[in-house]
Length: 438
Image (cartoon, rainbow, N blue to C red; front, top):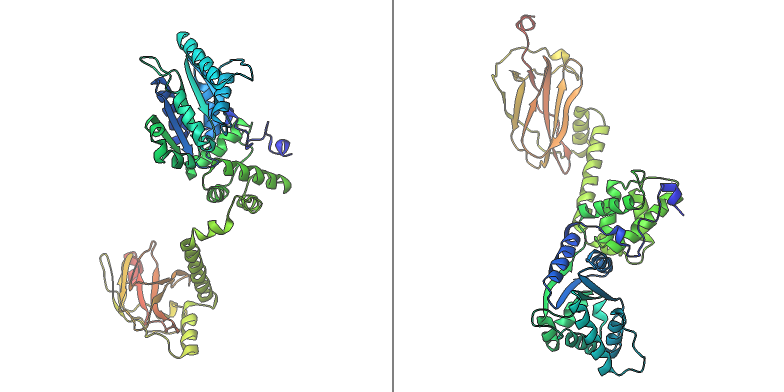
């Protein structure tokens, strides 16, 4: 399919629980270590629960492969939907007992007991791992508890590890199961992977499958992957596999957000509406930002800052009251008279106040009906707008460099448009004494 396209040796996101792909990260590493410690203690019951797709079966297989077979004798029952008698027969088979089919339940239990004592005499700890334990009938759960009653003076002859969905916790919470519940000495709950862990998980599986940096998931693709999957490893695998297929179909090597979106739309387990409903705040914020950006683009596209303000005021006839400068100051202010007005674009104007400072703090009175203010700082020599922005406050600080001369204006903007600009304020950055004499 896409192996040659991406340079992979095998499919990295297969749903088969291959222990090569076990990801020792965060709570998965903690769960494996907890299980090893609990089994070393020789106690009776251990429980691992987690939602569908969180990796319980893979953890179970990894534990089976990790135990020292010189110390442990392991038995594994993947489908425990059995009667009490069938469970005992399944355990006998896992213990290597070849029993006749017509053997009664009492004889089967007796043979299992004998085998457990034999293995104990050989120095072996017998561990029974049961996957999908939430499916066990109530009578079978009780039969399992009775099997763990077999013990020596110092150690249980049979240890049991239950792997199940959260329904297992609910069933064990029933009062009729209190004896079994009290025997569970260690328990662990598998949780979904966080965003950082999921990125490492995807990279780990690609690396095991033979990728050598030739397959890359874009950052926004990983964001979408985590949002759609909720951090559930099985959904991560399904969506990643389909995203790789989408990239292959489009002839692209890198996995993009588009590929993940395509995978999500093709996956029934993903509730696209639920994903959207979980983030209404961000959608509203995004919509508000789009509207504000559109407003600013319109203001900037209609011409110079002065023409924008004057045109809006003339069209509405009810613009906000013009802003009046209260003060403008900077470090080491020095009044400099008669700055030439003919250098300012827009014709003859009153020169206004003049400052000689590199750092200028501008302050003005709030205007009636104004929600924002349009600021304009223009280089009088080049005519370039150094500052041209909308602000909500009535103060603004600007730091300028070089020996230049500038003009500052402010216009008040409300719901009906913007006022004409104020009387301009001229200022210049510190200049050499020779230039001042000119």
